[in-house]
Amino acid sequence: MAAWEKNVRRVIPYTPGEQPNCTDIIKLNTNENPYPPSPEAMAVLRNMDGELLRKYPDPTAGGLIRELAGYYRVKPEQVFVGVGSDDVLAMSFLTFFNGKKPILFPDITYSFYDVWADLYRIPYECQPLDNNFEICTEDYKKDCGGIVIPNPNAPTGVEKDLSQIEEIIAANSDVIVIIDEAYIDFGGESAVKLLQGYENLLVVQTFSKSRSLAGMRIGYGFGNEKLIKYLSDVKFSFNSYTMNPAAIAMGAAAVRDDAYFRKTIGNIISTREWTKRELARLGFVFPDSKSNFIFASHPKVPAVEIFEALKAQGIYVRYFAKPRIDNYLRISIGTDRQMQALITFLEQYLGENV
Image (cartoon, rainbow, N blue to C red; front, side):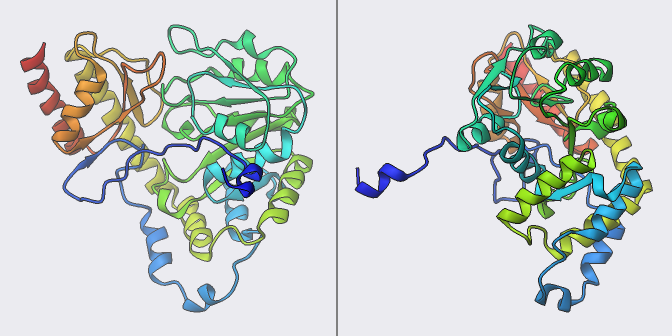
């Protein structure tokens, strides 16, 4: 080991879903929206003045914050934006989890949480989901340094009832509780409505899933004004110009185009429910998803074998070689045509292998 390596901060990094470079595939492995961004957002990009790109962007992302505040009926001072919800969450870990007590989050969940905890030297404890992949509310009613709850959860897609989410928030008034709502638009009930009653609540959402802008990296969070001020102070101590002008303008336009947003969400939910019925017909089992993916297992064929067979056919889904979930596949919801192709192949494959 070189002498300088003794001072290197070592972490095991997050592993993102595979991003194949070929175009003749069906990509159902990273929960991207299968529909294009809002036409109004695309028009903003096409008509963008090059002068905006020559200059530094608005460090406050004021135009985007005002649109979000108006849409969600909160004050602009209650909104924080970042480069994807990953940026918002990472800044939140850095800002709020600085005590000696462990923070709590589920054992089966978004796998960036433990990466951030390790990176920032935050002690943590994983609370096990039950056999139905449900969060056990009582596990989060104990002394701790903070809480992170994804709702709906990933990769399971299971939604926790908002009344139980509120129980957890109320039981932890002396620490920050983060509700990660990356998938909330696909069927869940948002905790944004609880903001007025709890100053320890931070709700985080994203444009990557429901608003078809994963490539622009836009995330946002809601909290009380003091909480957002603390978060902003850390952000501006880290990088003042985090969001580019195109992201700010396209994000604001996407929020304004509510009709298109609701149409595409409706399409995905409809396709998800059809896919559930078809997977069940083929013998798959899965928790009831309220997200834009289904977490499915087949009792007779190992998930890894189905994963490899699908990949060889040019259909990419997500497989996690981890305890408790290594016989499940996370299948993102694509277009009707893409999901029909998935079901057609699975029907043939299972017919030959079961």
